[in-house]
Length: 382
Image (cartoon, rainbow, N blue to C red):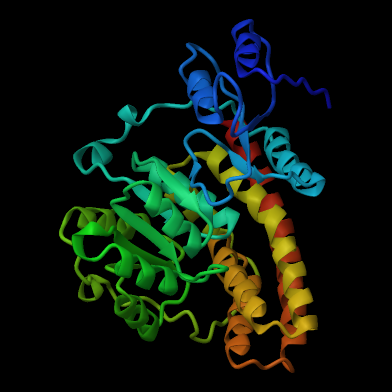
């Protein structure tokens, strides 16, 4: 790998202007002449330039990530392992043959829906794969959304700027979605505060009630469905009011699941449809899922050994949600049961469930890779 470095962002812009090509750009948040936002905007406004993925390096870890400009973020001081993982994720997308250079487009090119109902949107979601999926779906609808990773970062983001609506995950570290919502309603009461829409894989009636009692206005069950998201966005222009009566009855996340097969390939086709048929975006999500799930599984194993039920519950919730999105039925079901047992602080049955989750991911990984290969060959034959 060959790298070029400069302390002057203007010099880097000159490299691009001379036609030099790069696979990825790492940019510091604060630089002389231009900061990272100004630099990324300058690249996006360069005529006929295919902009490579840009990764932001910043010590401001609570700052919302501008997903229209940056592919990812590395918190400073940058750890070698995190840098390696980030580069592998980006370059493996390129190796898949589905990655094309990003042509950044301004918000002015938003879809008609976004023009008719412009909104400043904040996504609160701790898992990178779910973050990326939410951002891509909103982009399909013509919206640019900022992203934070926990409830405390939600509060910091609101102190910096106004948001019309927050799409809030429930299970987040440091401060979960319910705690964050209560704090938002306390600090920004009434119409001073944003509309808050819950996004959660927990779809029990009690979970919806807890969301509304905390002060949320609407509720979306994961995996996201485009028509339900569009309906929720349509309600965002109205005066915030509880929308529990408007939400259709969702299937129970804790109901028993009969698993005929550990993997459902139809889920990937559904994801592709949700992304408007954009195979590059699906490829980037698959890369994140295959990269991050082993980390969650390792965290789960450490948490079980340490009897850390809070972390066990969080890991189980993540596996349940992302596994369902990618058709990993066995992984998702194991995550669901792990989450339920962690609530009861019961360790005894967890061992077999952790093994089931590991096996389920191994099956899903092989099946997803095969599906992606077959889909690529089918597209090439057309």
